[in-house]
Image 1 (tube, rainbow, N blue to C red):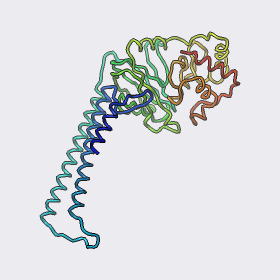
Image 2: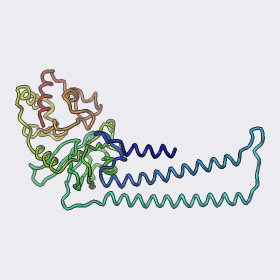
Image 3: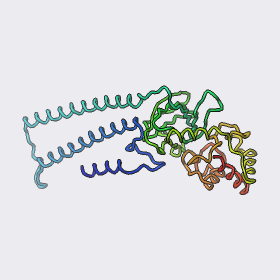
Image 4: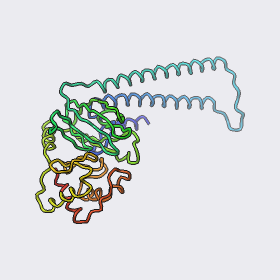
Length: 337
């Protein structure tokens, strides 16, 4: 059994992390590394207790073994009872001390996870909604503020401070490869820090049951070099690109003449509602519907026509568009890089 445990741990560390998956055993940030260390400490303590318990049960079973056709003997052994009492008392004392050690180390780990500070961090505002994440990069100049949805771009090696709140119910921001779980409470703002060392795409999930589509409330943290992050920021600051084809122009008209206008923003057009995600650069995102669907023409069309079939209870109504109008709308949205 011990060899299989070692093999399992080696495989967990050796297997590459694919985009869209998450694991506490693949830390990409110092905060996640501290949490992983505490995890393995508790794991080996519990494994040791398991081995000792099995050994004790085996020894007791071997000593008290009797034939099935004989009555179990009643043995009076005061000296043995005294030794057993000492053994039980010692085990109880070791258990209490171990629990206190784990408690202290848990507090220390929590302090390490929260101990990151910087004078020039990247500041991100995360707002949780049923069932998606609004991501804002605030700036004192309104025209320099970036708003997107469900994808959090950050530079590697740079501290990031995340400001959080919720617009409806209790949600929980959890990116296992990056840091621990953070609850988002309606009417209450909080903040935490993290820093990512390795470039990559790290999946996150709401970890507090928040309604029917709780399981379909994911997000991605995309860690990239500082140059790539700056380039992404500059692209996000631009207004929506003007459509270049007749079909795309018609698609923009479809967007502005239907219910889309009432819920979404596309900067550079008359669409300015904030009920739903900002769609100014929707084509640059890997996923849609809070990591529920890949961002392709087919899935985008299906989501527009009948979102309730994909995410029942989502706050987006069906849009029964004519086929030509739907195709034009998808063409327009797919051009919003």
